[in-house]
Length: 501
Image 1: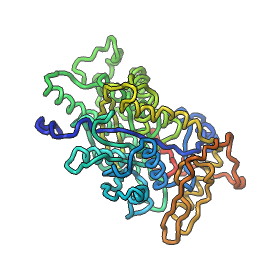
Image 2 (image 1 turned 90 degrees about the vertical axis):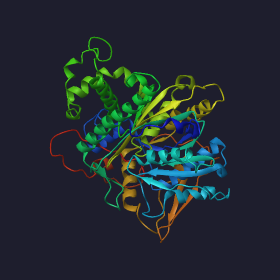
Image 3 (image 1 turned 90 degrees about the horizontal axis):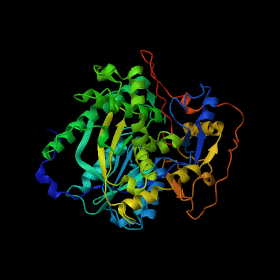
Image 4 (image 1 turned 180 degrees about the vertical axis):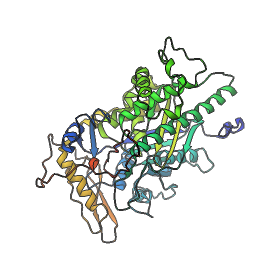
């Protein structure tokens, strides 16, 4: 079948190509979503309950895509002890551009200058929130190709991953279900604006339909593999230890997990509706999957039926999403990092992790990662998990600001992000130690960066930041995002800006 693997090719590939190390960066400031609800004049619970978000991180005008990538790449190199000379390819996956020609990857090559290594392949890959996954696939494919000559590091916005063979998180070969289709669900046609145009209802439909299609393709492929191995079984949620999703907002992830159970139920040849996970679902046996995108009865019923599965397989993945908001391109990998950060190596060993990546426009893939069985102290898995175990502490160390300060920062970005001959106004002191930041944009739009000292370990001040700008009420970007009116009544998606977007 299309996409299946010839058995003769297996012996020629490097073994267990996948993720060796990860680094995550979150901005040093956040706003409480409950306070933002009141500030924006929306109903209580619209962001906190309706979207499932508690806090939202954001960047001042001191940070852009290049500074974020400089920060997270250098941190990974420092924490892993890896030499810049051992990196053979660097991929940047993003949906954000600050130059229509020069890639962010070339900016990152400044980090390689002292090592003398310029033999580093790869450039930027851009397609909404799918850019990171496309870049990651490029990285994996390169390691498995004749071009590979050593380690590979792959980077996207606020997460970085080191990819190579003998990895603790290995990509399962041939198990990718991809769906690509044209739609104007979320897009950024205005080149001088950081904000998208969003058709909320269409965006949800595209996401859910892509999930259905990718899951179907994935199940067909793994079923074919199992048949070649002499196994006659069908894939379901029971075959995944964990399931992570691209997370525009947390509530959509919970609905997505429920939708996979709906798919399992409809595809099961003879589901037991008397007991077990499908108990009491017989009334939905004949529904058509394409008619259920906005069916509240189906949604609520299967969210309830899948609640235990959600608690066990997916809820832990929402730590960063709940506390930092939508990171766009690295969103799904923030979810993966959240799973790793909250489980011991022994709990992860041998598990299959399902990953659903979605990018508007639209492009989507569901694939799987197999976690190594070796969870002994000092193993590659132990090192990977240990590097992320302080994730909650990092989130807790951020500074809370008022919605007014948040709105002022966003207004400043709107007015200045495209300017030449500009010196950023944001405070460098508010950045975490070791953070790269923008120092100026000269008259030719050339950007210059510096790094806050790593040794500066002074604690961030507690409490709210005081706004130095007088009392004019500036709405947050959530109130200002352009939207296409829906032709029929239905739910609407709020895409939350996280600094660069």
